[in-house]
Image 1 (cartoon, rainbow, N blue to C red):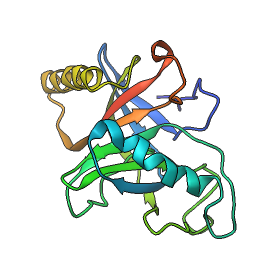
Image 2 (tube, one colour):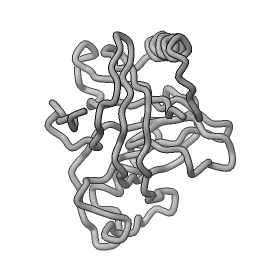
Image 3 (cartoon, rainbow, N blue to C red):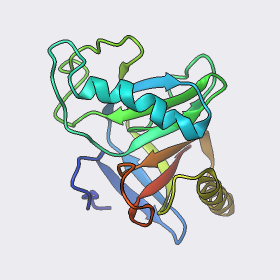
Length: 193
């Protein structure tokens, strides 16, 4: 149960691997702070719609005009109106009736108390509490079909392992859009009970 050290050059949330299978692993994430925004769908456009708002915050559109290093992953999850604040993930994109919650993890050196206030009222700061998630990791394009295939594999494996989940799946992307598709790292997270 060693703390995982990232092979990526940018900061990621800290976690401990609790269990590994041939399809997924169970991770326990330490608390971290995110900047988040809810944007309209469809899912394929949510990340692009959220990026200018969140990137604006980390590149200086905040009180104090502070700039922050990029972190990973960017997460996306669907959310239902009203936004459920108990939904957690680093930088996430989640589908919801009203849109998608997209999050950027803030560098670990900062807390809610030390981060500057966003200038754009749509950008919110929030601490994500410690959480345990089931994760499937895969490479390839950010297509809906690639996502759906791996989400199906994860759900099936979790059902077979008698592992109960809660909430919506969280789509986590670790690379910039210009990264060749075959070099991308993608994950789908499910919070486990």
